[in-house]
Length: 253
Ligand code: MG
Ligand code: MG
Image: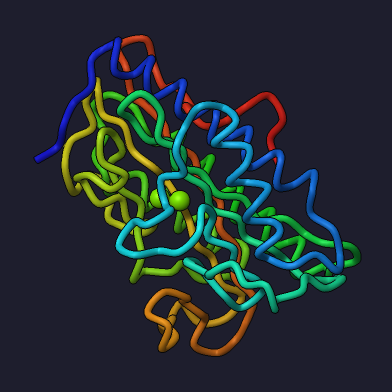
């Protein structure tokens, strides 16, 4: 069932979203060649805890860290690791959740490190652009399928492919709520968008095939053909006063 949120709940989600966005910014500012993904996770963890919140992902389904950190052909759910050193030319996906006063924020960015390829930069740009196309489809009278169709149209325009196996979702007291928010779809299909809906729109975009597989660790998802993958996510709310981007802080990246 889709849980609609009232104004007070949306304010609480905004507070959680702000901490989430700021934790991502802290990760971006700390990210250096030679750093381990474990060290980057610690930056996220410490920021969230200092802000008086709890890392949403830590212990979620047994996940052992505060951020999902996925590099290059890793799509999502990468596990921070003391042995994984970030290299010049990597694209690093950092996915963060903060739980504050009973509500979650969920947001992800793809951060280029040092000198990355032109194709990688184009992929990151396409992914962000596809999110904003999806966001523009969030309006009265539209349906969930309109969001996915808008996201996928941008991805197709760039010649990339949209991951289908993993999707966006409702956000609230639980990190993952109904409805599913696929990054592909048919306009006019799916649940109707209405005031009080809070969802994470999170395109995952691959240079090559849309197919992915999970590593034996039970978490890390990679592209089937080992092509690069990018991820961009914000938690947003549809209210009677329009759309609010709950996890976007002043500086987008
Ligand atoms: Mg996320
Ligand atoms: Mg999410």
